[in-house]
Length: 443
Image 1 (tube, rainbow, N blue to C red):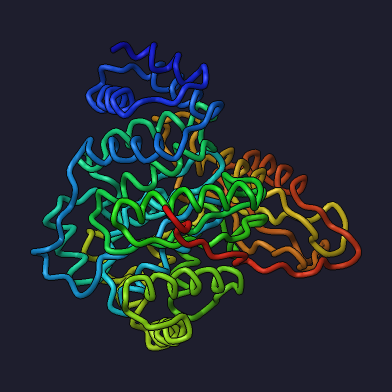
Image 2 (cartoon, one colour):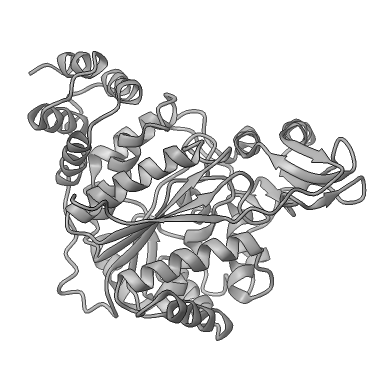
């Protein structure tokens, strides 16, 4: 079997066999398939798509490319649960959800990824924390999950290694948006983590990989059906990503916002709504709460009591970060020297945001990648972001840009200003959680 023939078959629209998919994934894993061939395969899948059967086969092959974690002897505090997001701008939900669910009895070995295109990555955010170890060995991972209840880490070299290579290639070849590749990438890591339950945040809108609600619904159904069919109970929520989620976007700035959230200092309403909804769904899926209302009450208690903040602190310390990060975030997460307030082109109310353009402005600052091997500047980003319906004028800026140089700040400010629509009247507020997806009947 030849790699180019598999690529040709998919390029021409033929459904691939399990054997062809297994062959290609094995080649991605051992390096016998070159980066150019992997990129061509990803582009062919983007253009031609995959059937549900193909997507399941791709997911299974990627899971089988490495080890599958077994938690049966780990003496964990509760069911092994996880949440994953399809991505967006300013999406720091994982940073607050994991310790919240841990404080309610769950065990969260969250395998996360880096930024893709204009979307931020949870691992990039956590690497802003001095000493935080995103790639612990299995012994350390088990210990931190057992003692803190959660550990947000990256996939190790032996956990879905095929996805590690393909993920980096997708980021720089304009193939990020492919539904089958997104589903297989997410689920290969999640199923390899040995989960008892999963909740998926499928974002849609200008800042998401799925531009429309219909596209997001299709991806959500793919993920739920494939995961559930593989023995992992799963649900998905469709959430709006037509603006920055929360009040910041970047890496260190989002960790700072997550800490403020856990400490109760500031909880931006839309960030809070989606975090609570996803966490509650996960508690019910994992059998830790009988219904959503009970789950919401438990989560609220985890925040008000400080238990969730304590879990976050334990996780950070357990993975090598500073034990007092949650008490002294400014000390460990400094902002760059240059800050620039972004004033609007006119006064009025924010009616729309091209969140993708805002995300690309972060990349321009150095907070994201344009090449797979590129380092990220964890300090740059934007803060004090005004939400849609917020009022702005020369004294109330759209946001504040934090950059390494004045020129970089000015360029990013121009990009962000162009991405904001301002009008005389405020728009009607839209819900952030739009729909819940469960397994399709008969699958």
